[in-house]
Image (cartoon, rainbow over all chains, first blue to last red; front, side, top):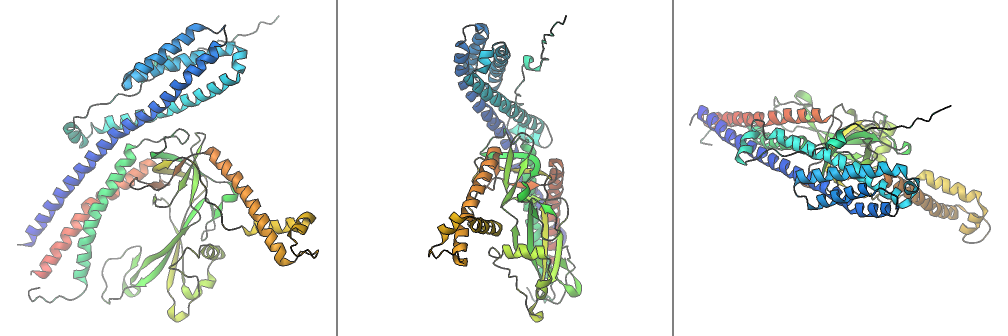
Length: 194
Length: 341
């Protein structure tokens, strides 16, 4: 056996090992990307569940003020029910956006009720829900980053070959509602002088 | 070997090269895997990051004023430093190899630096990403990727008394942990060359961390008293008549040195317990994540940006995956020609 053959065999052996190793790395990478999406969705779901549990308390505090607008509370109740029935990322994110919009409506309306705004329970709930909303926004960003990483990776060479074998498709992002994207209208009452 | 007579260290070097090539090949894949993990995990905010999983954060090192330490060799104020103690080991064989690196020398001074011990200024540091919370990073077991050099100090073991005061103090305070290194002047005849290598993370330095994040802050209980607190406690007793009579065990109306020291120890312990509790409460209120090694999760700490770190890992993994097989094949071919001419 000549030196040339030995070098050739070495190249073939390491070439085969490199291809196998690279395939395993890509395969494991794609699996972990997919699992990252599931995990980051679970992290959102935990926060949504916590917020969901706080809503009845908020509704009962608001209902104790007889003059508080019932329409907005009904809207929140409906959104809560919709979230409860929803399954899958898209439907849950839609229901979650409705809950967020209803909550924003309640907190905005509470500005007109100084007694309610000063209520200790209401203040605590507002603080807790605001914190959950903030956490939700960050985790939604994290989830979308995970989905974005995955969606890009399954289209890139050489990952596209392995993704094709695994039949991996694009995942959907957690979309922000039109209401949240819209500009906030601020009505400032300017006092009249003279 | 079919009657072939082989001399010199070349075959040994070729054999080492063959093994190193295989090692580089697999190490390259490990780095490729790390690169992909870093790419796959998006950056979280410390305040809202999920615990109990792999988390990636970037932030600046924060440190309380009284927690700032001075790097022993450079003397720079920092949040964390590490010292590696290396000993110069001469090669025993007389024929030299052409392999030379930062840690090895060829020619008359042939040999290499061997790390015998290492120690850190503490268990870790805190980082803040302006999300309203901070994270504690316990560095033990982490892969540290640093940009920026190290500071070295070399001397013979018979000249240990000439080392900088800061380094000496650091070595003395860590003496119990250092089992393979003794800070003792040896005679000129048996002296070894030592190198002390320092690196540090400064306060305000931007840090990238990827690792398993946990919640809940538990600080270790202090068993030793700070000398400063002990002296303070001594002064408190001397100025307070009630304390004086409390620690006057033989009731002779005088507080002798032994009584004073015993009392100072008790008071100092109380003072430190109060101080630690205050500190713990202060830190716990702001610390949301604790990064520490948890196998098999990856644990990276770097002062490079994520982009630079990925670039660095990509370069090294490519070099190792391609360079390793070339080295192994080359060495195998050389050995083949040598043994089967």
